[in-house]
Image (cartoon, rainbow, N blue to C red):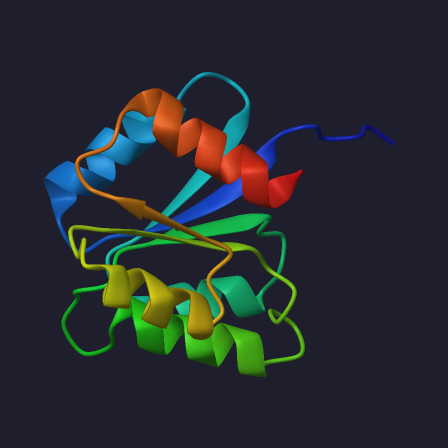
Length: 125
């Protein structure tokens, strides 16, 4: 039996270019990356298990990242998952609201590779 030391990160972002940027930043061998372009799809992926951290945008069609946080925190399978909100919503009230929805951390765009990795590590450690 081998022990996998990779951290599995579910990236939830409706912008293909932003999704690729995040993937590029995390492509250093420490992370297994699963991508989703919609919150509903991400919720279904998370329910299957094997996710260590979720990084989600807020502004998305059909379901926002805030709504995704609430769903994840209400479900017994996913309620302990750390969630990083990664968004262009920079107002203090947005951050407060995100944390009230169950986010473990709040990162605003634009961000650096180091900021993304440090934020993920801070909620996963």
